[in-house]
Image (cartoon, rainbow, N blue to C red; front, side):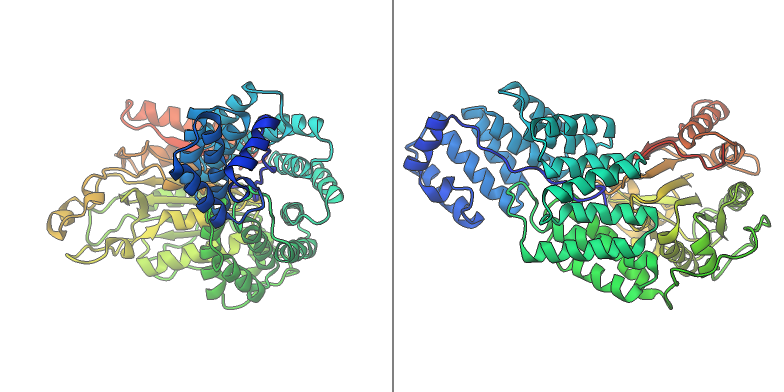
Length: 572
C-alpha cells in the first residue's frame, strides 16, 4: 500500500461568488452544476453547454469546473486536470486550484498538488479544507511534520472535522506515536460514527499494537459501513474506501494465521475497480499476498509457542537447490527477519566470484545482531522463487524485514529483475519469466506496520550482452547497463511508508564485483551493518563514503527512504 491508508479530501466547496453561483445554476442548468448529479449525466450536460459556445469568461470557467467535478467522480484524473486547467485560464479561483490539486494528489503527483494548494490559499481567505488537502499531499511525500501542521490549521478552522482528526492520527502513527494516533482516530469516530475511513485507520493501529482481534473487528465494521452507505464525497476516489478496508482486514487475518479469510478479502480487493494511485498500490499488495497465502500449506497459529533457543550464529550451509523455509515458530517469534541471497555461479552468463562470499558475510553480520536469517547461495529459479515467497509469507509477522541480494540484475522496460544462476535466454523466449521481479518483492512487503530494508548489490556488469546479440531485438536489455530506479519510486509509487531501498550503485550505473573476496559495497556494508547504536541511514552514509573512496569515485551507492523515524538494526 503506497499510502499509509486511504487519504481522503474533504468535500470541495465551489467558492465562486454568490451571484455567480445563482447565475450559473439558473443559466447553465442544474444537471451540470448540481453536486448530486450522477457523474455521467453531469459530464454530458456540461459538455453540451460547452458545445453551444455561448458562454465566456467566468461563466464558461464555471462549466469547465463542474465538468471537472464530474470527471473526478468517475476517477478520470487526467480529464479533471485538463478541465480544471482550462477553468483556471478563464477565471482562477480557490475552488478550481483545490480541485486540480486534489486530482494531482490522487495521481500521486504530490509536489504539483502542493503547488496548487499553495496557489489556492493565496487567492482567498484561509480555508480549512485546503489546509487539510495540502496536509494529505505532505503526508504523501512522507513529510509528516508539515502534514500535522496543516491538519492543525484545518482543525482550528473546523474543530468538528472528522477527516482532519483522522489524517492527523495517521501522520502521528507514521512517526511512531501510536497512542497519539489512537486518540485522534477515536475523536474522528466520535465526531462521525458513520464513517468507515477512521475505522480502517484504527485497524492498522491495532495491527501495529498486535491486537489482531480488534483490528479484524474494526475492519469488518468499516467494510459494512462502506457497503451500506458508499462515500458521497466528490473528492473521495471511487471504490478507494472499500479497497482499503478489505486490504487491511486481509492483512490482519493473515497475521493471525487465518489464511482462508485472508484469501477471501484479497480476492474481494482485486475484484473492485481501482481509480487512484493508493488503491492500485493496495491491489498490487493484495495480488502478491493472495498468491502467498494460496500457496501456504497450513496456517500459522497466532499463539504459536516461542522457541526456547536463540537464533543460530552458525552460517547456513550453501544452497544449490531447494532453499529452507523459516519455521512457523521462528516466524512468530522472529520479529527481526532477513532474506539473504548471493548468486555467482551462473551457468549461461558471466560467473561472479564474490556474491557467495558477500551473502555469507552479510548473513553473519545480521545473525550476530539477533536477526533470524534465511540464507541461500547460487540458487536456481525454482529455489530462488520458493525462498523469496516463503520469506514474504512469513514477513507478515515481522517488525523488521531485511532483504539483501548480491549477483546479476537487469532492467527490462524500466523494471528490475534479479537473475537466478540457471537463467538462459533463447530466441523468442520471454526473458522475464526466468527472472525474479523486484517489484513483486517490494509489493509483498508494502505494509506500514513493518520496517523494510531492501539492499541490492546487483548488476555488476551487463550479463546479457552476448545473449542479446543472438536473442533478437530486446531494447530494454540492450540499453540497460545497470538497474533502473524502481518504477515504484515514480508517480503513483508503491514504495510504502516504512521502507528503505538501497543499491550498490546509482540507477543505470554498473556496480563493481571487486578484486578481493567481496565486492566494495558488501565489504563496507558488512563492516558497518552491525555497529551498535548506528541509525540505518547514517550507516548507509558511511558505506557510501567508503565505497566512493575504495573505487576512486567509480561507484556511488544510492538509496531512497520512506522510513517513519530512526531505525537501528543493532541495538543502541
